[in-house]
Amino acid sequence: MAGADAHANDEEEEHGTPHYPMIKPEELSWSFAGPFGTWDLGQLQRGLKIYREVCSACHSLELVSFRNLEALGYSDAQVRALAAEYQIQDPLPNAEGEMFERPGIPSDRFPNPYANPEQAAASNGGAYPPDLSLMAKARATERGFPTFVFDLFTQYAESGPDYIHALLTGYGQEPPSYVEIQPGTHFNPYFVGGVALAMAQPIQDGQVTYDDGAPETLEQYSRDISAFLMWTAEPHLVERKSTGFVVLLFLVIFGAMVYGVKRKVWANTPH
Image 1 (cartoon, rainbow, N blue to C red):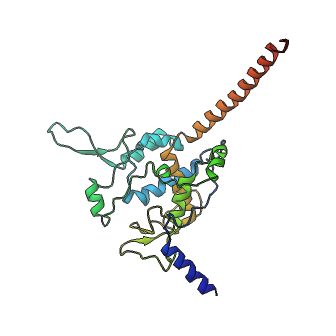
Image 2 (cartoon, helix red, strand yellow):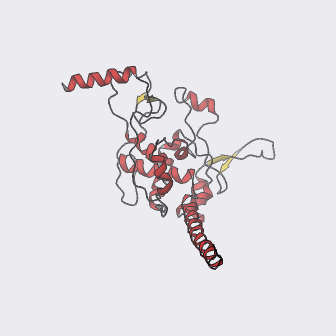
């Protein structure tokens, strides 16, 4: 009976309208969630390490300057040393009129691993690896009614990190019988663009060595890079939430004062 039910479900899905992602990302717990959330600097530093050692081979981070990393707890000297590890093409030619490369400085942005979009697509089977600077905002999945109503009160803004984590941990599953996977693509039920994507599983257990003793597992890697990409997409998230809370508190107090003044002014007015 179980096999018959599964076959029936497959037939129903096959002839229905497909919706992606096929599986909605799980809502996870993040340090920066809620009105009083804060960044976990250790986690953000681990996420940066994953980007540099894994993601940067294909994906750019063109909206993030090296000097922005001071917000992650790095000193000016550390930022300068990290920037100098990259070769940056200077925007101005040298005295001979030729373009040249130099070690990076804090004001530079993370360089693109490819010279142009055509080279990037050619190196990845025709699929252009997107820039990751705003990925945690660009890939936020819709939550539908009435969930989005509650999100207004809980200040839920973690749909992007939830999605990135789900995508990175969603490889290796068997596709349903009605799904046809094209050669050169990889099934992932959490992908918002279809049933499969060109990117193979980018990271696995033990691939990146942590210096702080954090677990070197796919689960931890996925959480760390997701949190880091949330920071790159909205580095002032925590400050914005703090400011918003103060403004709301002020409006509540101000409204109570206005109501009290109104009551006092009109208290002795005959009706």
